[in-house]
Image 1: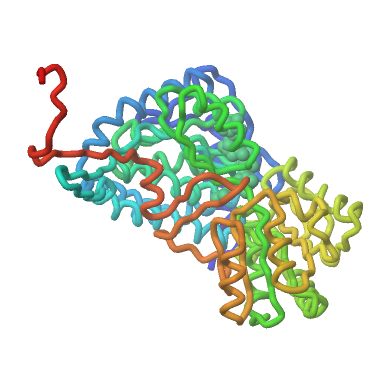
Image 2 (image 1 turned 180 degrees about the horizontal axis):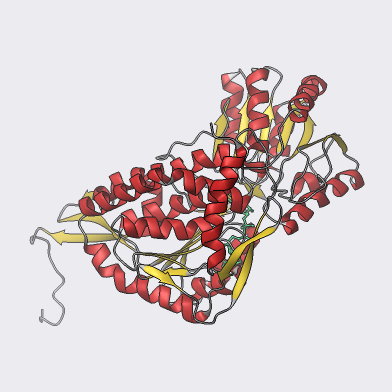
Length: 505
Ligand code: NAD
């Protein structure tokens, strides 16, 4: 395993590339410098030093990218599914071949520990391979025979798609949207988050070098309220696949209203993990710690509210504190680091603000609870006990390594607390009583429930949330439902009577 300084050297090599030129857009198969010349600066959360300048997409850039996607659509849509599969598999292979570089850049740009980003890059390749293999059957529909007709459905790609992604695990998340869109036969304009612009460019380059025709995948850099907004308003774009905050999701629906955009929204969460006294508490402890402290807690499916049965509250919290105090916070490029710096000084300030809220609202910080001094956006992994579901730490998405612990007595109370939130993304249940686990799973108002498990992904299964956590599902055929239109074709057997208007009596 190379040591951290070798990793830093590798990053220094990459730094030279990014610092020597402004990061451009990628339009119609090649890098495209911004038309307006406006740029913004990208910082590394490791020490908030500048990584480089990035083109800030203007109306002219967005228009060029959307036109490129519109022009490439007919040919890509008409390509045989088997051929699309071949190209997408080549992209998957190329991602795998470049996984080390992708992980390094992602860690450096986002502050996520390299140990998690290495896996995320490989998962990006898996996303491409999974949807590549489904490209030939994406159009398949149903046969719906009637007495005098046969009806059958088939699907066709909806058109150019805007994919707008956030800064947490940006590479993997973008492949989760882009791979099924391309497999369905859609073309894409991707806008990554302004706080994590780099790996989107790598993906566009990798895909192009692997044989994706020009214009099929375009990437525009820029600020959400400008480039993002213009993209969601552009008439050439037929649907918006969005991952980000619930507030931005609401804006996107409004922005897309005039052009009647189809929208798919994967939004925030305040996910409960409910631990009953009869659970396998060792495994539950592992999962609780993993699901809030991995990926710096900057994870939509993080189990940010621990609902713990009162009879085991003290014992479980003591074990939790022990584990949390041993978590290794540090440079994300260090292979041993478990928690890296938060993405940006603004986000760091937001997360640290919740320590103050916890105290003001009467909760008890039992582990961590402070920023870590020095350069970079580091924060202590934190456990806040004695909380009630009314407190701000229990209601608002913190999106950092901060766990809020709320005690409960009995199933009914656990369910009430779990559902008493505007969000509805995921829920985790820990119990050895199968009946109770089923009852709780039925009762939770969330899109995904895991029983006696951490968030374990299965690509054909639906992924998405209810309530303020989103609209729509990804995964397997659910993704194609979004990226494709269903067409019904009705053919007569030529025997039924057609009303003869104007033919006399
Ligand atoms: P964000 O909503 O601030 O930004 C996401 C993207 O939207 C960025 O690319 C941004 O530039 C763009 N954007 C911002 N305003 C826009 C506008 N008006 N029009 C168009 N685009 C606009 O979110 P974030 O802070 O980057 O990401 C964190 C959020 O993402 C959290 O709430 C998290 O829960 C959520 N998230 C959800 C999932 C999920 O699967 N449900 C997965 C990952 C992250």
